[in-house]
Amino acid sequence: MTDRIAFESPVKLQVGSDKTLRTVKTVEGACEVLIDWPHARRGPVYQSTREVVEAAAAGKATPAEAREAFAGLAAHAGVLVND
Image: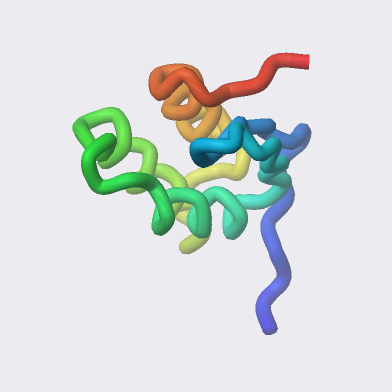
């Protein structure tokens, strides 16, 4: 099993119709969320985020870049939770 690549700080999202709180702490966790992202809400912001997150998983982008892109997508989609 490979090591998970941690974000410096977690990204919190409200997901699903019940607004469940999900805390994403790693690049791999972001990949999992992106796989489950609703197809109807996938557009250019989703695609560019997925490219950066996958690049970070492959060691071609930094975890900070992946977190920034992922948090940006969550904010764009209106599901980002700010503490």
